[in-house]
Image (cartoon, rainbow, N blue to C red; front, side, top):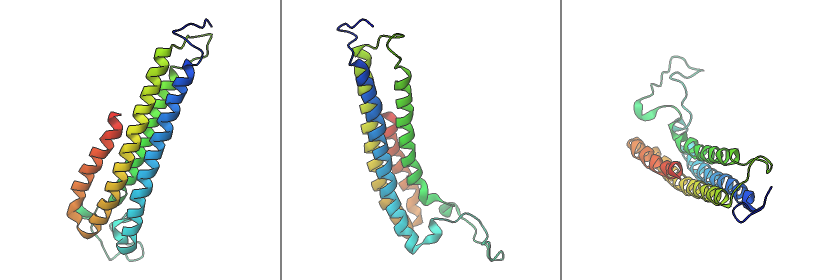
Length: 172
């Protein structure tokens, strides 16, 4: 491999750093969003367990008691912030795989400094926006699920704000 100013030996390190930043920061955001909204879900579960796990329309021990689920009280809807936080880690994984697909062993391809800087910036962009999105999903998920416990009409507004938070990570 011919070392020049345009293809230095440290250029692949920048690409690998982009992969690491995307995965580390993206997963930190996903973990924070999951933990923060999970605390709110656990708090709701103490007072209103029916809002957390209501998976069937009849009780298994008492088939005569039917609990019809209304549109405002569908199964597992309090877990939406946790699912949305997990998607942030998938965004980081996809970008990391795309960056890693461009890295090849030195005899096959010369990895330029330009590619290394682009991949580093891409990894930082996806990772930091994933972390910001995880923070926003965690805060909104925690307070939104707690508010949903008191008033079920808040659900649509909570989901819209969660979508806006998720879009931060998607556009990164």
